[in-house]
Length: 231
Length: 231
DNA sequence: CGACGTGTTGAGGACACTCAAGAATAGTGG
DNA sequence: CCACTATTCTTGAGTGTCCTCAACACGTCG
Image (cartoon, rainbow over the protein chains, first blue to last red):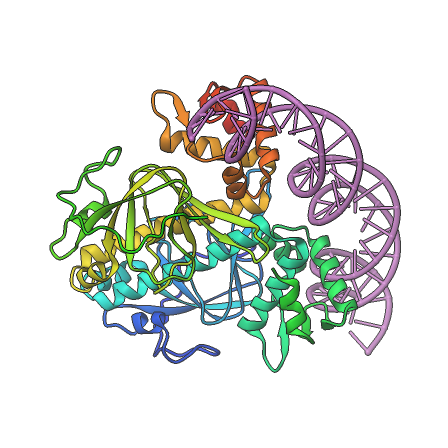
């Protein structure tokens, strides 16, 4: 799948905490700007693997530009995407020594990365940093708990409605949503097939709840009716 | 549902870190035995609520005896159980200020509890305690990630096989498994109906992979074939 | 013993999946 | 710039897995 092998990220030192679409003060930036923490930037091409399930946790990442999917596979190829990571989001912060999911760039994606070792070193003495790491893992857990409810108990239409509201909240610009991921990714995130996702979106379009500019450019016309479709 | 209202747990100070079926040294015990952390015990009857979704996090809990389910509800009553907590397990450690799930005793259950405030106070100065809290949340996240894969992508039989192997690992005594929870609980954990769970178990029994002593007393006869049924 | 909670099994149906074809879009090279 | 290809998306038809509804069996406890 990959044509270029990534060895080690270029050691281009990150000058100062800054990123498009990222609030000036977020827990990760606080950590990254700590003395002793080395931050750098790196870019990945479409569908390029950032790290694999089971690999050692060398870095923690923050999306600067683009989007990332993290997922698990069954041995026959069935895939469950656990989360989409958008600009500002931190991913790869697995508390153990190895990554629990695989991470791939969805499109052309730039990330900031921080050496895990330096993070641990700071956390060992700085309680504020240790607390921030805990809070970031807790935030991932909250999302996972909400998503288990979706996967186990919601209908296809409820799943798609929840997805649209989540994406609207996270990446809507000027009332318009530019989805970075394909229908298959959405299906693998929601525990559906891509056809079912497509049918649900078409149905919402027919009902006037949303309008397509293109397949991935969506304008929500009625968030309330969408929220009503959600459970 | 409850006939007795729980006001505040009895302030019976916990004498020393000990519990049936609990390893002598676990992260929670280390924390609970810290100076300044007040631990006590409390018991709940069958189906009694321990805390509700949205309530303030006053305590963190460890199961001493019995079992606990934590779950989320949709407005029409559909339920997703996120985890079963067995003796030795810690639950209720939500990093925010309010609980994200509801916790109920499955049967007659005894828990050890620790005031969250005292925990935070210790974590603010003791990096080891802060690290243990992070690791416990990370452990919950790992379980949630595995469970999302199950809920989103596994078939009914694969789900039940996974469940049996998990319970076998966590509560098997002398080759025998005594499930504390009913078929509906299992279904709500696996994203299935209780009938589908029952049918899958009957099928496994017909195939000789397991034997019922009673509906909840199960002996696994062939873990390998069960693992093969899992994906 | 009767009543209740729990579990099993059957029949029928619905929702989402599979397979397939065609349309729209993006990417590539002449 | 346009033809050509590959990918993505949509839509349809038919199927299957799991759900719903129902009846009955089992065990426990008053």
